[in-house]
Figure 1 (cartoon, rainbow, N blue to C red):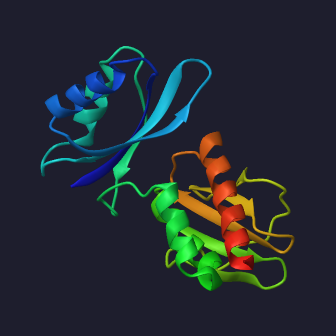
Figure 2: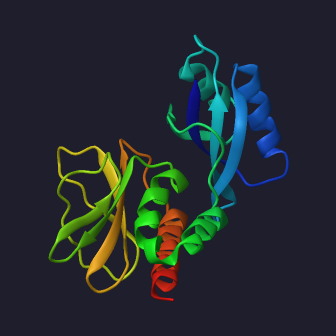
Length: 202
């Protein structure tokens, strides 16, 4: 069964090796690792895709990680997509393959790239003009200049981030329950939105 683990750990040689050994000892099999963010305080945030045999509890992985010095599990959940991580460069290749559909293709790719549940393109006047299947039926247009986190409704557990495409459209990405979008992820969403707009105009 595939799981996504987001972990904060010291950004020093050997940290990933110790993490991998601990996960392996707890019964997890690492499929891929992506460095999500490196911080000025000497820590890094990594996403780890792992397979766990049937009957292995996520708690055992969390406990094994927390037993390591200065390691913190930020998030762990089942990851339906499984497989490998989808890199930003692969996304750009997909967008340039058919420039006339670059904006819609961006929406298709954002949940895969950011391990999110859905994405949508929202127009100022028309509302949602394109979305993935799990997106809400209605999303408001928000005035933003750069990529940022959006405030959720009090009873909503979905974490949202948005980026501007142009003066009349934004993209919104949602994760049910978390984890929070990191600053580095916001920057990447904004960058990909800008690239998609440039590709669509060419």
